[in-house]
Image (cartoon, rainbow, N blue to C red; front, side):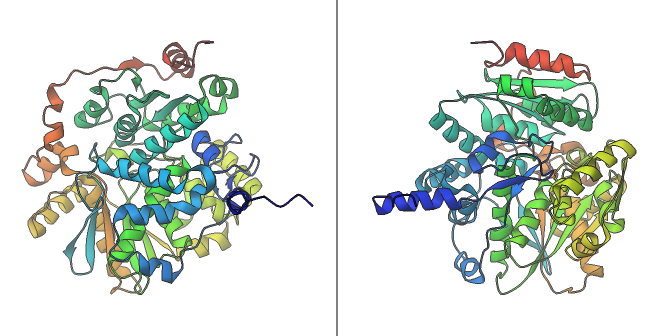
Length: 491
Ligand SMILES: *Cc1c(COP(=O)(O)O)cnc(C)c1O
């Protein structure tokens, strides 16, 4: 038997280390990691995604105590068990304070009622006007603190369909321990989105426009992760929604939203415009932790792989078509793998085989038992561009609010689900994922009104752009990264 630790503090520390939550890969072949390693690793070495080995539970008593508390305080309480011994309580609180200090609204993610039984949660008050800031502002803080303590550096490489890029760049800009490279599909992001990335004037920031789709960009990032020699050489890290810490940070607003509407005493639904399934997966996580969420309603545009999945249990690979909601122009939803892991009863070997098959045949069918279980929690609704424009116009006519195309899809999905729902009285929160001014063309087309950018971005269209155009060629992209990251040379 090992000797007893000498002091109470020593005992407490050992206890924390021993019982800190571990993370496992959805493909079952990578080592289990603690939070710090999961944060720095991103994609698992077996090609899977990290998920917590078990879900920390929020009892009704704990949830009730969140009522009326500030966002930051709920955030610390909800995230604490996921982080374990990686950060001291005071450090976590400081990281949260800095991350959400950049938001332009005191409530961080304010809730407004738009109809009987329907609320809108505004997730776009961060620096880049999209919900990605909620997770990425925190991720930048976590990276900074953890890397500083370890005396290490990383190269962040990510793919963006629009909003992740600017949010990641804003989170990592000017940080001494980070170089960041963001790939975006050339010509497939809005001008405002592109300029929010390319006008950042910081020495550690690189924008790469790829001649291809978002899925091509994402595939290249995955391929770089799977190239162990490259990955180790540049100490590669991810900011894409595959990074567990992003999911973790997003769980918080599901909790604050549900509590504001009466949880734990009353259940709520969430309607989530979805592409990579990162946002809505955080809702699933909140439900798994004990938050009373009745339905998670997934909204898609015409790239409707998720809607087809949740209505039929099957997925078929399809080509991406550009839409008015470009941040959801995705046909391979990487975070869905985390849900599929549970669908396969957490059998990584079975999921790995199914995913390999999906890559080969372009087809995926959910196992029947898991699927029946999952179906009870999810609904899905698809809108084409014409329906999206109609929705934006109607929301403006009925409420006076200008909403962006993504948020409009969430609102319509919420209304559609309520009509056919089992418990029509259950309140629904639709997540507004972008500020209207981020998609001014679509908003103007729908309503005739061109939304103005907030003051801090007012001169965006006249700032100087910096970017590099590269072909859809993995070798060329890796060459560029090696030539520019401070970790690429053998220093
Ligand atoms: C990223 C994004 C989405 C999709 O979120 P996922 O987590 O990928 O499902 C929806 N709306 C906006 C505005 C976004 O930026």
